[in-house]
Amino acid sequence: NSDLANDLGNLVHRTLTMIQGYFKGTIEPGEAEQDVDRNVREAFDALKGKVADLCESYALNRALEEIWVYVNDVNKYLAANEPWKLAQDEARRPRLARILYQTAAAIRGLAFLVEPVMPDSCRKIWEFLGEPGALEDVTYDDFKFDGLRPGQKIQRHTPLFPRVVLE
Image 1 (cartoon, rainbow, N blue to C red):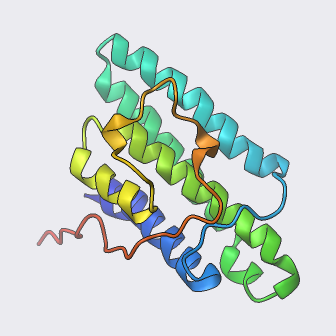
Image 2 (cartoon, one colour; image 1 turned 135 degrees about the horizontal axis):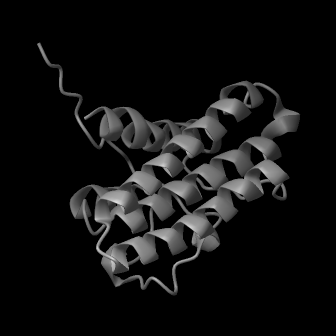
């Protein structure tokens, strides 16, 4: 529950809420990638290859572990870049847009990779991002990190995973 609600669910919710609040629900590309942004994209590309290899050798648990390392890295990227502070300075909006684009693209990639084991939740993420077509129709070879279209409108979203409180 912690991995789902606190890590992936919170990442999705925070990112989409900021896109809604700061850009009226429109995904903007922002400025050119900086090294820190490029690292998010390149880490996804490497992860996609690792996941394919692990799944082919039936090591699904290892594939999910690798995916969750990336989830945590994207959460750290978002926290380190402090988009909520950038939003206070109009001159920093291109940087803010890049950070949110990169994070949304990472979420889109996570939905794609996790879909075989959590199809319903991943379809929701796909829909929240306003992606056209069905997630399951996208092929592994055709999926690209930067396939998220600038100008795309996100959809109304709800929390993906309710928190479970243990007594």
